[in-house]
Length: 295
Length: 326
Image 1 (cartoon, helix red, strand yellow):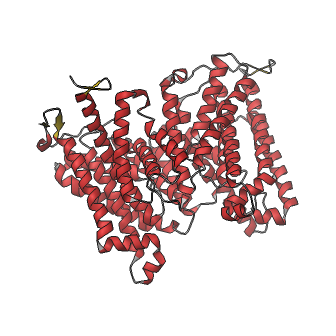
Image 2 (cartoon, each protein chain N blue to C red):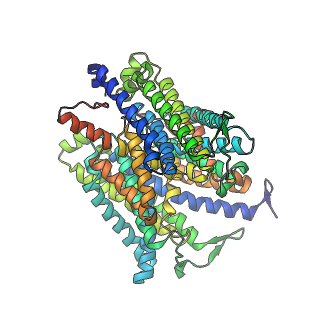
Image 3 (cartoon, rainbow over the protein chains, first blue to last red):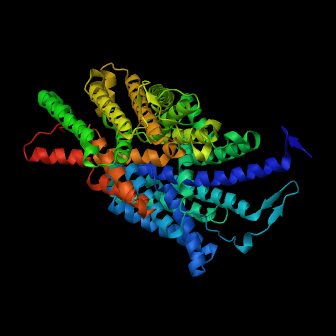
């Protein structure tokens, strides 16, 4: 059997795939954080809770209403985005003139509220979500087996990320968004409704987190606590990538997912900490992050 | 605060001394009035923790979201030296405090390279790393924690197993640390710190080595947090993962926010309120998490100055000048 540095090739490839799947989630979540941060200048601490909401809504849709995965893929993110829009209008919008740290504290409080509420209803143990039958089985690539659902997650995440980047870089709405990120006042003077754009941006970022949650439901345990530890890792990913660049968030997300998986193969003890260690090193060498600009 | 410092320095000082004396007296007498010492000791440990945190956020303007690593780190080192190495309590507490300040230096060196929100995210991520390191190190016994830490003989004389002896030791340490923080805040160093908080570019242009001040502030704050953790380990004879978890970092932010950021008494009041809430609402289970979140949201939206900050404002409206000013 072929071996790479003493590890059998199929095992290595299997872990690489796990890394890509994790990276797909890191990328989608840090992309949402970056988009929100760009316009609102706040770090959305509720991002993990919104991811969890996406997964729990998916589970509830199937368990209570027999609504399939495919519908959940649309309904859950829209539901979370609607909630997020209300939150932005009623609470976050009051804080824009204050220190940005208050936005962090508010969203942290919201995350605790959501998490506490759902733990009450569902307990903290995982709820199993049955994989849709379309996704059972795997592709045989000759050198390894590729489970269909994992292939779908990686492809879908790449698609969503690319679409988001294209929408921001190529469309008219995206150009408004970029302009408002640079200078909201001037954009407003041109007659563009910036407050509404801010609401939509926050809703979009939250929806993106929920979409990641829907895709996570069949792989990870659906639980009210699933987003909390993940979001801290995503914060580290964001610090490594730097907030300046949307593409940077995506690339760093995938990259660190793979690095984490490789660490699991070669030095399992460090697999929990490797992303944080990389963050420390990046902070020492390039404090603005790999793709970021000092500002 | 800076306005008051310039205008009513004398009054500020008097008010502080009187209030501190009242607080110390209340703490000394509380057990005689039937207040449960264990509750008080727990509240005092968290009050010290919150004061340490407040030194960083309230006066240095640096919101750390990873302060649990210093509380828990101090607790682990103190528990280890007291239990496995048989050190007397005073030496173990000193070891825990020192270890936390060294951790603070290392973490601070990294974290102060970024500002604002990035600083918070960096400290949170580094604290999560510390959590996993403590989880995996054999000496912490993972999920079990270091249990039945001996309280021992203080200075070889006072038996801390006696509940009141332990209590008065904690009160003494707390009051001393509180006075130390007051001293730091009102020293030239503290004034430079506030200047950096309010206008960093200006402080730089005046020739201050801003990063050095921030780093020293971070190390002082983490040392005091480590002291709180060490005392907590001796009092409860336990050092566990709870103390290093990120929820603890959130908790201390909440205590400070509820009491009033940037006021000296605020964190103390906030700690008593939150510890009290946890004690009396313990039966509510997960509703506690919800309530904590709700308090966060309400405070941020409507009560940003906290209990002390808001009441000082009302006193000022009524024409009374409180000790905290602002």
